Length: 123
Image 1 (tube, rainbow, N blue to C red):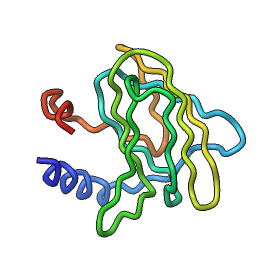
Image 2: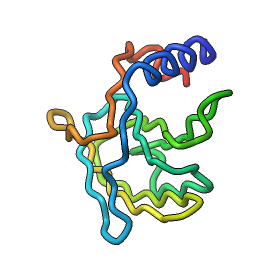
Image 3: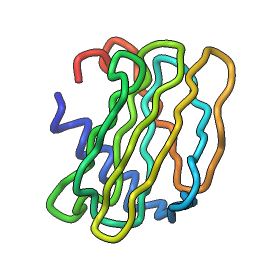
Image 4: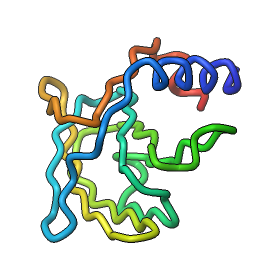
């Protein structure tokens, strides 16, 4: 099931390339809906991801045969605030995710993945 999901995401990504809108010097604040999946384009190969609270947000690098970790999956699990440090080959990005029920940012490079919640919980 995971392989099918990753394959569909890969096809979707190839159709709509995006570029990262993250800054390296500041804390990037991103508002997201609870119980959702997102794909964020970092723009550089991800080396390490440090998440302050995985009960709120899980961040997983997206690596396939043609994708080398420049994108990450974001799974929002509950309401709250979670700080994430993403280390890449050339930069470190500090991101503060604020999750809730009714709001989300529409930043360049952030794509919401529409998926039934019963499948999202099995990842």
